[in-house]
Image 1 (cartoon, rainbow, N blue to C red):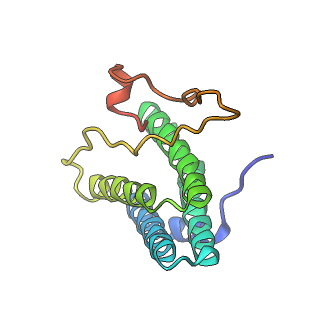
Image 2: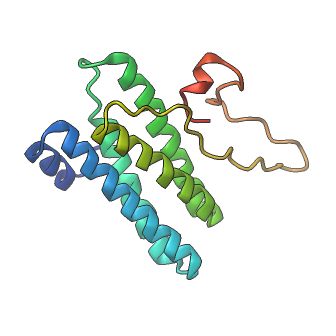
Amino acid sequence: MALAAPQGYVSDIAAESPDRGIVLLYDDAVAALRKATAAIASDDVEARCRAVCAATEVITTLYLHLDIGRCAELADDLAQLYSRILDRLVEINLHNDSGTAQAIIELLDALRDSRTNPKDTISAAALPAPPRRAVNGASAAPPANAVPAGSPAGARRLR
């Protein structure tokens, strides 16, 4: 099943310059995650779910509109980053995890700043590792897409 970007976001991006459209989407995702964090604090499950769904739509839109022809290596890195963020958004809902929401907010703020101040770079952004949960007493294995610590790719990619 293929994912489709929400039409409202697509038209908003088309109306702006590419960089400005991306900054607006980062702002929307951060706003949604701040709502999710507030909902977690007030134990409002419905509001948290709505906010996380809104953030998921925005990140999915960013993922689906990566320009591979413009810079393939950067697009690949961002695709992996957005994919990891999408995985972590599920964790927020499953575990009522405001810490992960805050880590994603900080990462998106850094990505936004890199768009508005191109001379700034993101050295190594990382979300906290997902909790390892034992199943039937067995130890949980690391996720299949985990980047080994200390690897050259690990400095650039989200763990």
